[in-house]
Length: 190
Image 1 (cartoon, rainbow, N blue to C red):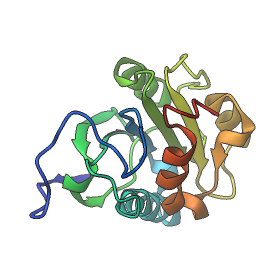
Image 2: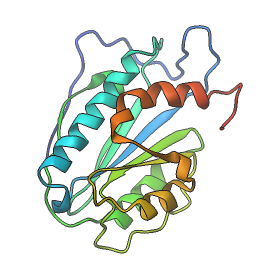
Image 3: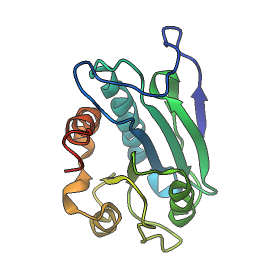
């Protein structure tokens, strides 16, 4: 897996709280739990890479004064953590598929990182090798996105805890706007 975390030349200094102009938003962080296992080889890993790029680009459309932080956990073989980093400092994301699907281990790491103000998104074809069907009681808001026609929708719905939080690959670029529109302090968690 080749992942580069570099400072964007136009990035502003990081402050602890961010606000969208005119809104009173709580500081949300984003945790992407990404399946990079061998079952994701080919079109699926290309779709995952496209979805992650679209989600990161989607933050640009929000006119945020401060960039939200994103952490990424990949699981293809042993899970790997890419720690919380302002989204605008993440570049050149290109994941490769390989290894077994250690979803349970990846979710254990996610449980340690997530807070009540974390939006977690699992992106997978839903075919774990380790029986990883538990949501692990992740705090915060949990979504799931299936990749491929053979994605295990039942696993995704159980993980998200609500069929309405299983999202489409086609909507990846729109998710940041949706998250901020629906999970701010004034409106609570819908």
